[in-house]
Length: 108
Image 1 (spheres, rainbow, N blue to C red):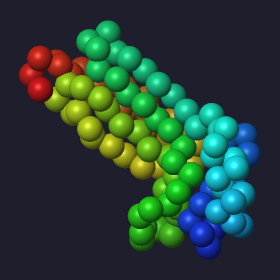
Image 2 (image 1 turned 180 degrees about the vertical axis):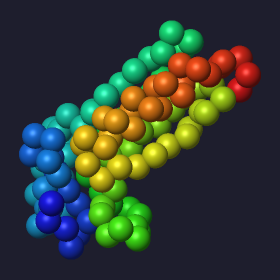
Image 3 (image 1 turned 45 degrees about the vertical axis):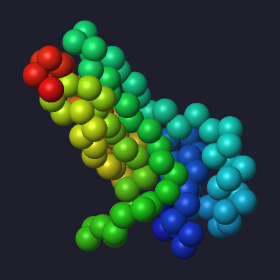
């Protein structure tokens, strides 16, 4: 993946691609399907993983973290993790789902 000077990225399949201009990013973002995965566990706790398209953090490893997984509900409500690649995001989503499934939403 080429790093973006603007910090903006779009997806080409599952691969993040650096955008050269805000206009390029905005045009893509307006109609993009950014959902990587969405799960509602039997206990009602939700987990969502999306492509952000923006690298808003500074990372020691130098990789832009462009994907985010978040838990909605239960004891881990609003817990979030960020990922650099689609594959990492898919794996992280599965880990978050396991965490959410083990959760008792009444204990929140």
